[in-house]
Image (cartoon, rainbow, N blue to C red; front, side):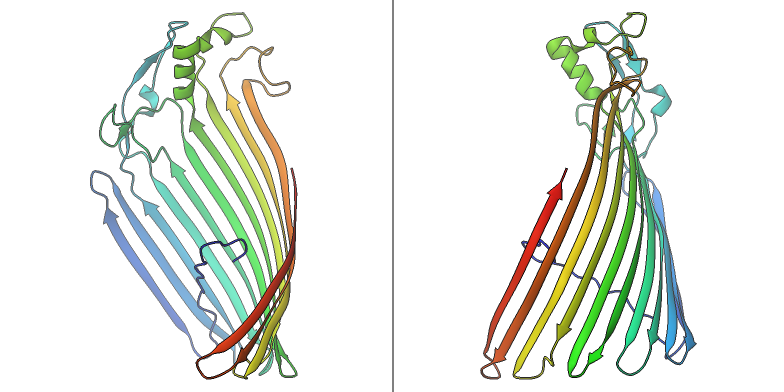
Length: 319
């Protein structure tokens, strides 16, 4: 719930259960009105390793149907008269997407008081095309002149340790996230209207000085790494006077790259060291947060409680 202004939705996955074996699966086929077909396949296995340990494996594969058509279109740049078309990219229901992933968890009850739960989760989301349409072209139709795609891969490892120290409950949580996103998108609409309004196309030449197609397209890369730790201690919450306190730390790095490209661009115009690149966004961002928090509750009656809490934090950002 860090920085959550309007509330947090918390989803708690089922934990491994050493009391018995269990397994299940689900299959689904679907279709989208004015679009294609899709499916979902998912399943799980809960396997007791011993009387006090079990593993749980969950896996899924989902294909989402497309419903946007990339229809044939042409475009002529007024400054140069250069004409292009998208014949090689024409496709019905071309905005498909898919999700494939798995989660593996191990729970070991060391004794009546202490439990450790390591887990790892992976997912790959891929999508193609655009999820918008142009009403000037047609209902659920669009003209795209360059490939558009989105590939999002991530893996998250986590460790939870819970136990008791005297009369107090103690929990420690650690997580690590590694996420890579590669994307490409059509930016040619902007180039065309820049040309219509301001003669933008007259600036784009090849190494021979000849005017070229000034359409732009974007190749993006985002690389995330996130580490977090939390140590929390709490007293018996059924007592009239109870408290919760803890420490929190998080660090995230984000390597950002947005490469705006024009094919056959003059080397004198391109970004130095980046052939065919007319604009480059390259940033490395680091966010770090440290916090200490606590809450003290006193039950005045069965229906009335007084509560005081605090959170002291420090956020640091570099770019």
